[in-house]
Image (cartoon, rainbow, N blue to C red; front, side, top):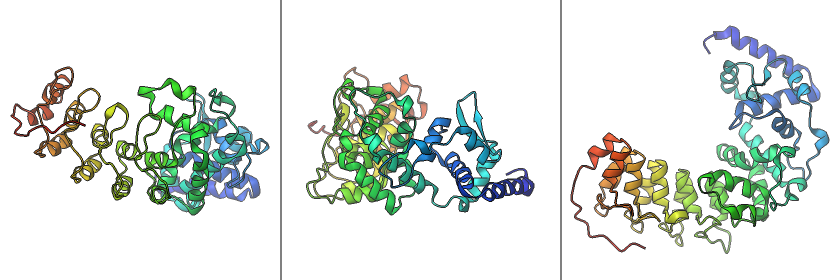
Length: 370
């Protein structure tokens, strides 16, 4: 902080006043600061108020627990304000965020607490009773979207035993849970499927944990008897595709450690885990996958595009170098439109990639595409 000890001292004194309120006011004020300083995105006032009303581990969500936003603000002693322009609630100044991050002792295991709160809410009878068909109006259940999309991000950062148990309970009926559709709609917004609004999706707890990259949960789920580690979900993706797509190296290693894994099994658009990792620029995952003999790096997707084409299209210079270092990669293989990786890089203005792909003749005999 540029303002030195004076500003830090002022924040410390204010926190002292918050805790000095005692009872519910102190708890509400500190919980509010914890949420605002650790969330994945800014919360709207009603989202925050609903989050503060959740009782961790309770099977019911009690709306009588929802505090008025005016009460929340008062309990924070001026450290929190409503940003009327953005319609979100925020800290009074960015330096307060820095101060709070430098003093984690004020909140304890914040990410674990947030994960437990989200999962308790998602496991509540009121939320489980919501039918995904038709898709409900989320205005009256404002905390549902945040908890559905972000519980796993907090759990990945700090997974408590309680959060793990709540997650496994959540996965018992995961395909029929309204949050599954919310997550899939957010993840697949480029390829939104109409069936997500007309029928329950096929999406397992293993798919979800792989998507979020929660190593410990994935490691437990793959050991469950009858687990189909290569199962495709309703959009065609395997757990490995989700993990590779999101750059979760730990989960990729866990899944590849199974004897029954099919590491080249494609997902939506016939895109393999290698293709998905390449597209997103996840160099670590690409290297892990290329370490397998049963991963074919020249395999094409639905549009006849290879991982190298994808790397060239997105300007991933290091990945282009890695793929060109493979003898079984054809640098001149065109897609269905007749464009080679070099032509694609040229069209997209990736000059460094263009230099790497300057005309060369492949000495590789193309393997059959499967």
